[in-house]
Length: 162
Image (cartoon, helix red, strand yellow):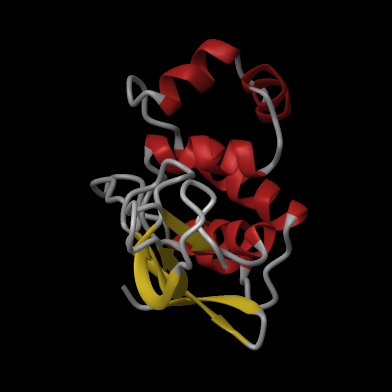
């Protein structure tokens, strides 16, 4: 590969990379191909199967035992491909409430939290998902951001302990 900026041959390595492109902190992609230009410093990240990556990340968020954070609510909504207004209609609430959830001005109630998780499971099924795990979500617990690592195993994104 040559650099698109200066045409110099790129150096390729495998590295762990922080992935915040979807608005979630604490996500690390492990052993990702990284190309660097020794001449101009241009950097390229090779992330195969981004759809599969986002599906694995959504599955990890859905399975976390704490209430969803504002960033996780926004990520799951966009993962589902819904606008704020469409999402509000499907959730049986107002667009203003969705905006407040996503900006941390109003906590999502436990029923809405479960409904969103079920919507994600329906849109992107998780093979090992147990509906009983939704009852384990502690409504009074402090919201903690998800920390997760993802790696590719046999062309499939898998979550690993972070």
